Image (cartoon, rainbow over all chains, first blue to last red; front, side, top):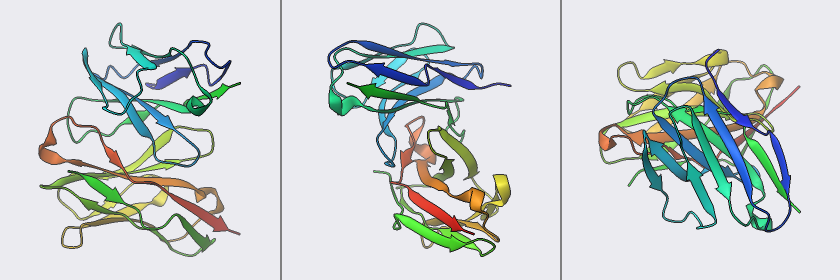
Length: 113
Length: 115
């Protein structure tokens, strides 16, 4: 089945230790998103790619970076995680039309010790 | 600017009763409207969307939503609630003419269905 895959599902890191979260998709969608979601809140958009065009939300901290080496893969790098970065990180994809819905991965829950 | 309001943080309903989760939106032009459901420790799952045409949209798991342009609303409904419907529900909007701007999500409504 076509899907959005996130690895790992659970990630534990130490304060200040860089961490990378990965997302892959078999949908061949040209739009990919990274969201941060804290407890029972709405997902907060961090970045999105339209093909290779990178769009950074104005309030995304510099501590967060992203890479999209090809259509299928997208990575979220947190350079120096703080306690406040503990959250669920959601990857989503979408086809190229405005009316297309977004497909979400299962998320990676990040714990910062 | 686009925005979505979900006025209720929590909705409680007895199993077998009808349920409604409210959503209102604000866009300059015509909206594309979406409902998503989130179960604990999972990603968001698409339920249904309104693009154009019939104001009553039917989606997954027996859910439906009614688009009301005059009230700028897109309430989610189900005729008979199940305990398994208990989850977090998000409404989202994108203005049809906005190209590929990201969805704007509401803050979510937690639905509890009591047996």
